[in-house]
Length: 219
Image (cartoon, rainbow, N blue to C red; front, top):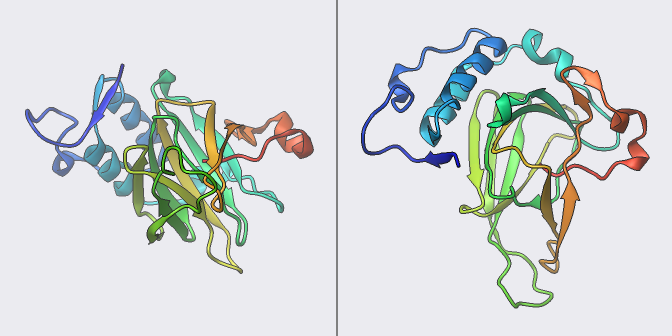
């Protein structure tokens, strides 16, 4: 199983963020991510800095940025040889996710356009019935900034805080997962939800054509 860890110990090729050569476009970033995730031990700080070093250019990701008026969309960009999923999420004005976990995966989120607001939550207490969830605070991420979360850190929800501008974010999940849990803020109750793609590799999926048949995504 792949291990994703903090920096420390022996420094390897993909451990030292100071050695990162900034990708000139999204294709170069994807190629570099494939190299990094070829290893069974991946450094969180390195991946975070690598994604931050790519300067967002709409020409690179525009073909993946498919919006919907009624909910945010997730659009698969690269499947990462089974080691990770890379996707573009498109947020219309004031759209947001539910509170959710990440199915024991690691999540990196880079803002490509606009702003993304993250609200962190503690896990609901085991055995506690109908208790509201505890917020750990909010973080606002601007263009080219990168956030990281795992289930060890807690739960979160993401939203576009703007009432006038759209937002686009780039997400990397490792390992990929097909379902996660969505939490009710008032009670802490959880439901399993399927992860669906609005498009894959720039082509629309049945979800885009028949939105009423698809479970709302939770990233």
